[in-house]
Image 1 (cartoon, rainbow, N blue to C red):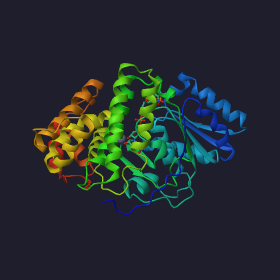
Image 2 (image 1 turned 135 degrees about the horizontal axis):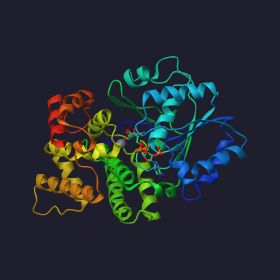
Image 3 (image 1 turned 90 degrees about the horizontal axis):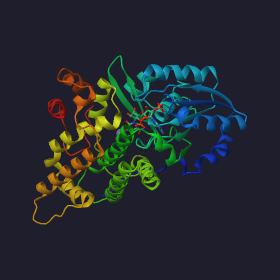
Image 4 (image 1 turned 90 degrees about the vertical axis):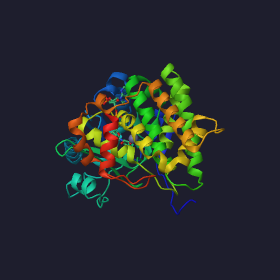
Length: 388
Ligand code: NZQ
Ligand code: ZN
């Protein structure tokens, strides 16, 4: 049964090949001082940087920049961006890049006017912003995180070996996001497939929970089926616009707060993956791929009916003659074949983790209790060892 909830998503989306043309209209409501935030250079190489700066110039904006936002943005980089935003009296933050750039921009947005230490306040004490928030807009270049339409902002602290996400409220979500699937076509295959698995896992995290009948699970099954079809096409032909556009749109709906409404959610794959990320700085989607199957096989018996449904409804495996457990196993086997077909990283050792890190990674793993099995630390250690 669906529980009580409020649904409100304030992010306006512009989707498609022509979507950048709407940036100039949005800029009319943005104040004069723009902070342009981007990553390590992909937007300069693709020419998007020149296009965006020309639009900002034509709109008469004063522009300050934060460049070099790294994948898995760090707390030191956050502090640098906050200083630049304060010095330039930023009215509006324009994020141009992937989830890291978008997450980072949201973290800056809640920190510029914050009198406290942002890491301590938002990522250790998990408090909500009490200061003025600088609005953010996003031009997305990578499909995966859903950051373009959610309040998530994940920050890594190398000193303490922690990677923590704070999901802020709708006052922190981007005011608008521009989604042009063409921009994602310059992604290396490794990043494209990592993004695809990130999308898949966002849906799984919200699907593998509860034993009730609810609309969200049916939406999730449709999203997963579409993603599997599009991913196979995109891996075969990365220039397939139809496939890339379906992937981009699915990413947004996988984590824009819709499918989690009215039901419990798991998120343990993300907790394990983030802890691996804190130790290895590996690509987010690959950390999830490497821990997923060991985790799902570990908990499968506790949620066997849902795993059996996953096999039948998402992977099209016939129920006939099979016990729930056999069906559930066949579903996870089908997911494993698909993951290998995509070329995903299937072990954390390939991401730089080793036996000596297991205890530390287990300490860094936040244990949540919305899924089918409440883990304890020894479960986490076992899953991580199987993931090596
Ligand atoms: O830095 P540049 O040069 O732009 O290169 C990036 C980066 O190296 C490159 N890239 C992005 N778009 C490109 C491109 N290269 C060529 N052409 C393009 N069009 O790809 C690399 C990865 O980019 P990144 O932004 O790090 O990837 P992603 O979108 O996967 O974001 C990962 C971050 O988001 C967090 C992750 O933990 C990680 O820190 N997440 C955010 C979530 C949220 N807001 O809800 C949820 C997710 O579960 C996730 O935790
Ligand atoms: Zn994710």
